[in-house]
Image (cartoon, rainbow, N blue to C red; front, side, top):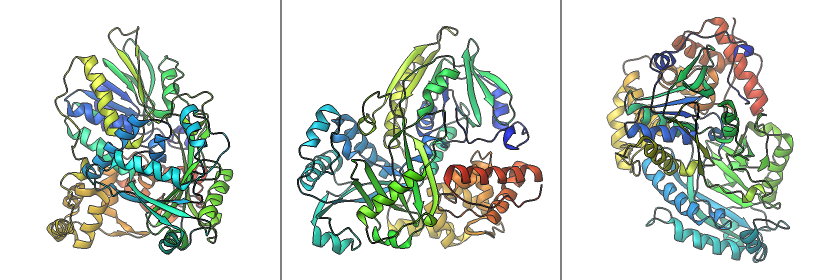
Length: 582
């Protein structure tokens, strides 16, 4: 399996055993072992933990560092799934989207989405062909009549008593009045609402926190990989120390996403369930393009039939995505051909806005955990999920469940389904529902301006009102724990980035399972995504993380060097060699 996780060959000396791993090795028994700490594995962990089930989650890299970290940052109902006839998935998706806006309002918010339309009748004949045969024929953009029909049906599925507004159509003149930089060939625009997920990694960490908070029966460790399955249970290896040990369990759940087949092969159970496709994105620092979007996502079908997006996010513009076959034994990297494709689609919508590679601050690519699809074209492969079951003859009574498929929008419902299957195998009843249950910092989150003001005033005495506002926006009501930790501390702003403080970064390292510097810049913060990583900042962050984790000078230098290499090779960022002295 490909990995960005550092090993001894990356210049990192073997580390001391982490307390969480030592505790797991001392008590290596649970009812359930979950392999894979992406959003679906983490959500299943949370659900089972809330039922009181002894459960262990192991992740070979960092939590949410695989497919879940390479999303399009959307929680969406899947309007295009209507054309594939996946009405059950659309219904579940819009239900979960509307629910997440309520239970995770700190990270999931309504997203105004506009579709530029270049014709009136295009696609009327090809769409039924796609619906009936799942083949596309000659690519043609969907016209206004077809999009109007689809959005009318989508409204019927998705409004939930007005959680999101109905779609609206505008002609060319009014469309350009709202979006002046639009291609003059645009005849209409359709605007509807889905939802934005500005911080997917942080949302997943909140889900993980909820599971761990359920009690000592729920344990989770990163940098621990499954390497076998036999009479003594799941054989795992601590990737920090190289130590191996067995985890005994009645049910083993493989939620390793696009790596599911490779994980099953490691477990001695070869399968051919998966057929994931690669999707890449670029992030641009481009004020003109940012202004042209008017704060909305531009979502449309490109000339080749691929659904693509231009999405304002964190003061940058994210552009994506592709849908290409991929070998999971190789790392997923955004190629130069894909960059050219993204530039073409920007020009298609905003022809007078120039873009070039110097404006790209970050690239990322991941593989969707789609089922094996043989000759079916990637765009028509189902985004729904299923659960495969197998017995483990070497360990009678143990069952292996493999999750095939799944997506961000439906993670809660999927986890409920998967947890119910596990509970059935264990002969246990569900004692608590996760439907409507607030996630992490969404609990007690102030939903009105008045309530927000009250919260900020109540917490501003310790850190100042502006700082309290920032922390609330960043962490939801989990900010209370950070504020309590920072009270009375000389919490200096980072020398090389004024968006974070030393105390805040130290808190993240101390409380959020940080093992490596990469975890800080890519997943605990947005510093890599927004292109704000510099060598002086890495030196500063390595110092703070090193103080918390006991790194010596050599380890800090190695962590910086590894971070520079991964950001360069996998994400197109150009940083000088590490400057901290060993």
